[in-house]
Length: 490
Image 1 (cartoon, one colour):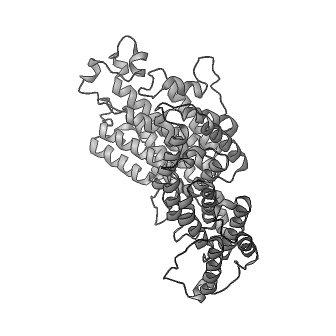
Image 2 (cartoon, rainbow, N blue to C red):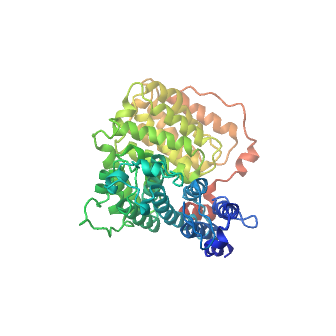
Image 3 (tube, rainbow, N blue to C red):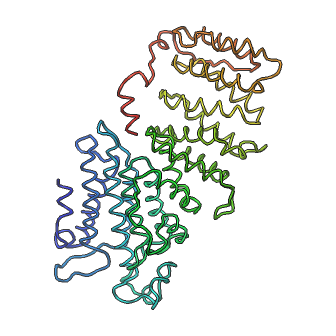
């Protein structure tokens, strides 16, 4: 309530001086942060209200204008930049509680704020109302050029540049790529208004004709009432825009959440759109093969979101989908592949000290898929030992799952192991051994050693072992209902 009240004040109270306005903006920006706390706890309503008020304050006080009647000041360049950063940070709010993804409330409000602030910044920067543009304002703004009259005017401070434009448009595209219908709908509406604005048009948009064409906004007769909430319609449009290199990382980070999500309808159409895009052999803006660009982006996503369950689980599932549909075959079959090795390293890092059953299962599935590559040395010296380590994992469910899946892969492809290996006996042992039984760790290590000998793999015994009592007392995250509720909300 207090946060909303600030946004309802007139300019003479909000901004009688730069110091007061700065205090108001700092207060709202701090309150809108995803990690902001009220009374030691997160409050989704307060964060959303702070974002709403930030947008209203921007409209009220404006930028680079003098209001002598109310004796108030407007936002300067530093303050506008501060609010832009606050809105962009709010778009990273994915907090959840028993009500679900409550962070989406703040993200929706932040998108409205970004649209508003972008319009204010562009108008103030170009001093459109003062007539300082060239005779052809549309062409000059579209190309990002400002004439000498406006650049020499000390009162005009250039805030909205190409880098910021890419970040703002990318943020909208990321939200359009994600799994919540309401978020996609709002992001689509905001982006459509922004890129079709003519009074004045937003400058610095990379490859704007292709962006408009992909969104079916390239002509005045185009239907501007697209149902952005419809995954079947929106995802193919977004993937067309993914050919623009500046927007590809943002789009992919949103698509992986949809492809690896739990909503069947969203997952179906997101997977279809991503697979069709990845299978296309056309070169993008940078003349780089799509699978190469996709592989690098996936690895960067692993690095940027390390140990972040909300992203890593759908990311690993997405990699599994792409591998199973042959979208990454070319880069995985290269003799000096720059994708397979780094990918497996990221899987190992994520599996380390992990207690989330969902992620462990997904990591095991992708690791098994790597057994089908031509990298024989890596398979036998790294991947198979890693999977054998999963056979002595502290969770019985993980041990059983690994044994069953390894059996299936050996059944399908005998070339995974050496020809001298006793494959039939190993497969029988994987199926019949009591991997999910409660037993001491020494017995499990003996079972693993026996399996390794049968398939001809050398393993190194770990020096540290858990006491038998501690091992039997461990429980996985799959054993409680709260974990399921949390997973659905992601």
